[in-house]
Image (cartoon, rainbow, N blue to C red; front, side, top):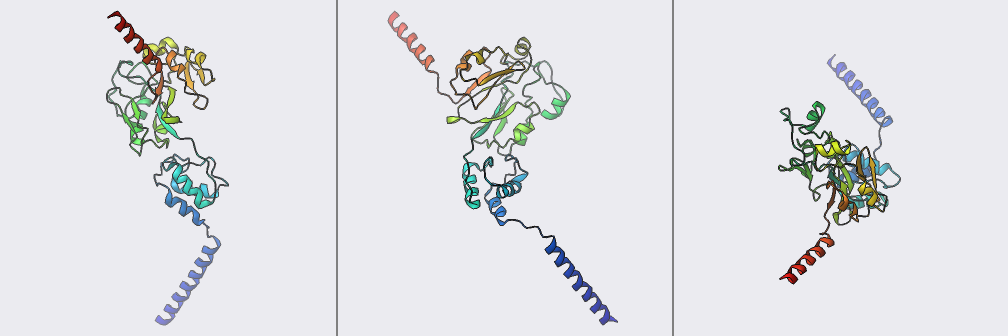
Amino acid sequence: MILIAVVSLGAIGFVGAGILYLASKKFEVYEDPRIAQVQEILPAANCGGCGYPGCGGFAAACVKADSLDGFLCPVGGADVMSQVATILGKEVVAAVPMVAVVRCNGTCSSRPRNNQYDGIKSCTIASNLYGGESACTNGCLGYGDCVVSCAFDAISINPTTGIAEVDEAKCTSCGACVKACPKAIIELRKKGPKSRRIFVSCINKDKGAAAKKACANACIGCSLCKKQCEFDAITIENNVAYIDYNKCRLCRKCVAVCPTGAIHELNFPPRKEKVVEAKVVETSETENK
């Protein structure tokens, strides 16, 4: 009886193994080995900045695509994409470097607080409960949801101004902070030649007087910048200006005419006009002596 039981169990096991083998062959899912090769050279940040669910999803999409146009690993940059192209035997088009910018200049001095928030220090929660601690309901809340979302330590809250600031040397343009901000004040923009950028640091859609009353640095929609721009790069919509970085030629004329200083210029050299004025003043003083 024991022998019969052993033989029976062995036969059942053999038949079961055969069925599992046939099923595995029939339903086998083939995975291109190049997917693993591409995934191996990716930075494994799984930030989602490429638009795919993690590095594995990005690698699979690269392998299946006919070309690498539109594909970019924001963390690895051009070097990683060049290696991906080599593995897949495809050409890669150099992507335009992007960087996150915070479109709010409502510092503590320009945007006085008229109430105090005592709830959980979360921008998302605070935004769902009320507008904020000042009359401007569009500005940075300063509770750091963007800081928590950044895996590269590229964003922080300035303790003096209470506004989020981006360290462009660390920013990988993954877009995590953009998604985390409930006020939608963080935007990915073209990094620009020599990291020079011009943008309107305000999203307040209130009319001019109301916006200025809520924040001294707010865009008031006066259209002076739009009239000054020779490249049709500035539009005024819902009482706030916006600069199209694809059209902007970085001439900085709009910056000079903005009455509230809402337009920011980053990483530019000092204006030549100021140097000339300083020399004129110095010369006149010398002559008077």
